[in-house]
Image (tube, rainbow, N blue to C red; front, side, top):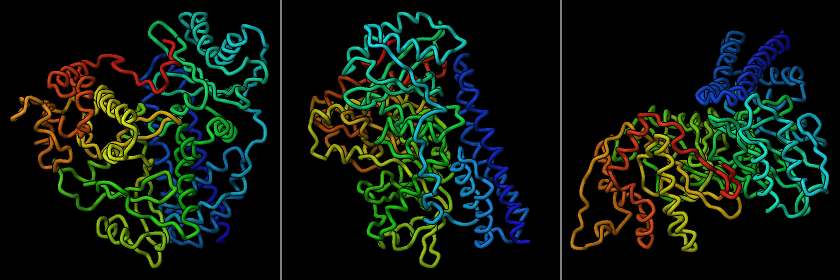
Length: 583
């Protein structure tokens, strides 16, 4: 009878997964039509629905489980039998990893996840040896028109209902870009192109690989749909240019595929430096991304030599952060009692802002976040001083259970170098200058999307590497986010003091928080951003030359008017190198 119950419940969980996955693919299947019809609002609705779909499906399945087993919902032995039955039922090699991740999500509603739950499954190591279902191979000649021929064939294999404005001219310009940068003539090896289209924001991406410098390198054609018709927007070639494509600072692609394992194997061949979590998240498989992230974390902890410890830098007033050496992510929990702040907030307000980041278009400026629930770690995995701080900081979130530490919830965010630490790192002044200028562009780009970061001190921003040579400033602290259109931008003359320099009163950018910019929750004096931005003294004049309007009340009020009028296409994020841009 017990085994019979386990089989029935396992089939119920599997049914919940199949219903969820069918809904997931239905949402993704709308992407091409949304793009062709320029239905950008509908595309955002789909993105929101995709993110909420998984949570709702898991909750429904968990309710079914409780109805079936009643008071035995936390019976570990029963769960083990159900899992064994589930493995027998969920035999489809095409999506077995997705089905197992779904099972873990349901189980975690009742029993904390632990290292054994993320041990590698035998089938997970079986990557496709050949790309046959989702990859198209294009044979090329070696003539003078080889690049144009390639681009035309690629586009022919990915037709749209919407016509191109001037396809011949687009191909001519794109061919010129590729010809200038290909290390050798095409034709030595066939070109491989993924059949699925990758949709994000207002672009459709065709992703493939070409042979160059003795190896395969990524090739991406990005297409945009304007009011007049389709255009080739960019062509990207090589690791450096395509690194931003799968960045953890950008929103997830919408992709339709029946063979995600083959697609992911192909993407890994193009971006070997990207972790599985990065790639899974970039194409919308958040549940697999979170499983991969936890598996990596538990693998690092397995030897017992590494322990969680406090992060370097300034302690957050709302979040308590800690990390693990060699792990690419920082973990955060919300404090039960916040440290003194300029603007009061609540736990629910903080969580709403973190949910906003998961749903919003991050346009290359906001770090992605993963939200975990009910995870168990060994107590020995924590530095004792850190553990004491965590237990004191958030007793409603973390508790001890014998030799284990159980988190009811925590967040994981990609590691970066906080801007205040970067400024003091001794980096090349030319690099610091580029980062300082990029910091100004970050605020302009976020403001153009109606986001005011609120807490504008440098320790709330970080520096990440994009590719091997480029650095980019990102926002990683969300609890102060507000809409630009909600703020009151006030004018106040600069107090020049005894000096003619407008910087005279702002010599120390590490001023205590009580004298910083926000006097009330919605009141902002742009002139005082000179203080809170924390620009190093030697770069302040250069920053003001490029971004001085950020200190002007008129700049912000004009932007508010523009945002309220909903002017179309104010600023479209451009994550790729300018040399790749066509239109």
